[in-house]
Length: 88
Image (cartoon, rainbow, N blue to C red):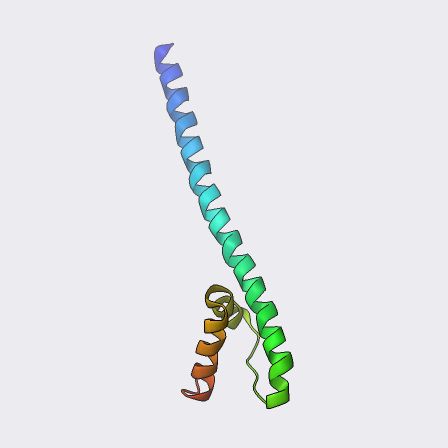
């Protein structure tokens, strides 16, 4: 009887640990997704106003992620990569 109870307690603790780890990774994944969405919106605004000066950046998941994580500095990084190094 004691062995079964001990096994049950260990199984519950392992399950709680797994759910805790998955919860943290899910929260991190949602944060990255939200940052990418913000970056996408920033790129759209930049391309709208940049068209006046013939400056535009491609809008895809990589550029959205870079802009979402780094903000305005991300747009500057992408501009440097596009116009100085011809990477994008």
